Image (cartoon, rainbow, N blue to C red; front, side, top):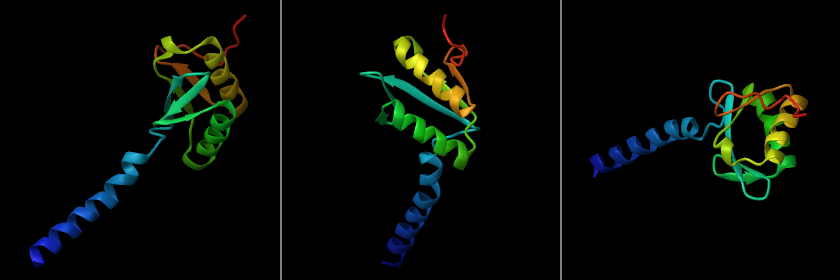
Length: 109
């Protein structure tokens, strides 16, 4: 019985240590997001619109030191989504690039 309790406590300790690392959104000052339907964005499984994304990125910049936004699967992103990312990045003074390294902050002519 003592062995079972010890193994359970050891397993819980490992989970408590590992979960915050797995749940961290910003890695090395960089956040990856993907385009979703209806000009929305997906960040770690959560879908949000432009306003929610702006607030979320603003909070991450102040709390976790966000410096760069990376748009994954950028070929599937609409022009409106690419423009929204660039606009948010300019407003928050963040770097924004797509998966190919193309700067999204520069307004398109």
